[in-house]
Length: 96
Image (cartoon, rainbow, N blue to C red):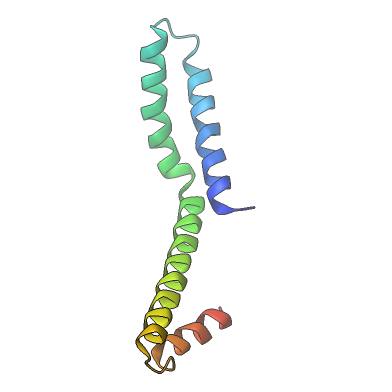
């Protein structure tokens, strides 16, 4: 499953659980929602840490690939040779 989707659904699930736990507490619905948002954020920080790290590493990899492609395109448009450290980075990415 896509890490972004998994983390988002996890955050929504944690929010719904916290909100459901606050239902019996006698308070205004708006206050209950605000409290559920803050409490679920704190709980998600600890409970969903592994999924958050997975999402972060995937985003970093995607960012590195885009930067490498952008650098190769700029080099090609400038008429420079495309061989160099970028190809070494791609070889490392293929091995992982």
